[in-house]
Image (cartoon, rainbow, N blue to C red; front, top):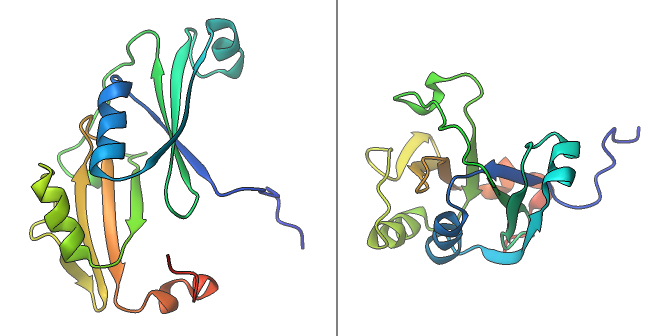
Length: 163
């Protein structure tokens, strides 16, 4: 059976933002992602895509595994996001998950850079062998860090592909 999407590269996630420069600094300097490129899309092209009636700037960041995050700042400020008190209080709530090694060390490193964690304690074991910590970027987008005691049991398709 052929996969319906016939993907050719890892998935990319787009995040609308109000301050692209501030988010770039966070994702590069604090999280450690790499800037791939930054471009401006003019209003006529942006409108044709359905993204915005105005132009926008987009910056692509990449993880060590090749996934990309696109940060998109429309030329006209976007509406502020409605957020619940807890992450899952609002339908459509989303978050990015980074599977890491040495979660306690990653948490300490991020705290040293000023990151405050929603999870108390951070990290915390949510089920045997699964540890996590939630935090937010400067615009309130939710990020999750997860560590598995046995990553191969979680993703046997990636066994031996650890970086």
